[in-house]
Figure 1: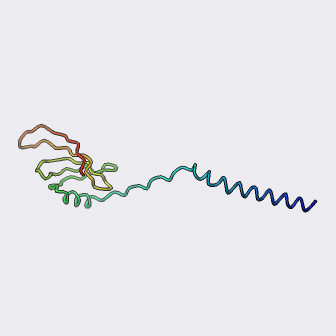
Figure 2: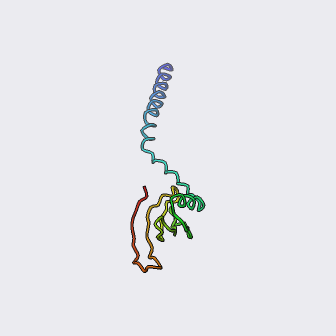
Figure 3: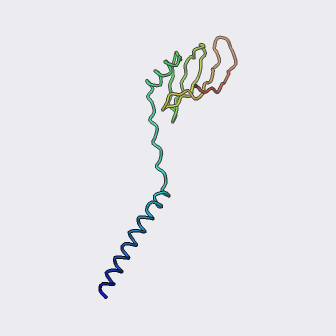
Amino acid sequence: MRKSSILATLALAAGIAGTTALVAPVLAQGAAPAAPAARAALGIPEIHQRLTAAGYTDIDEIDRERDRYEVKATDREGRRVELDVDAATAEVLRTEVKRSKRSGDDRATSSQRSR
């Protein structure tokens, strides 16, 4: 009788171990995905450098707004613009042409993506 008791215990232990080996990967698949890594923001000097390299001049204001910067500058055509710049990549997300103080032109807005 003792022999059958030991065999039953071993069979039970093997069954539990086998079930655990099969169930663990299934449970892991249902786990919530890891949160994406936060994007590191570039500093104001780096944003200034990249915009200067892209041809913007007279950069006189750079304000951080969450995941972007608001920048006031002059574009290559000499127009005053307000830019929304991605804080992590320095990509210009939006360009708004401001009214020229000299000519009295109406304010024009354009949604341009830099490529």
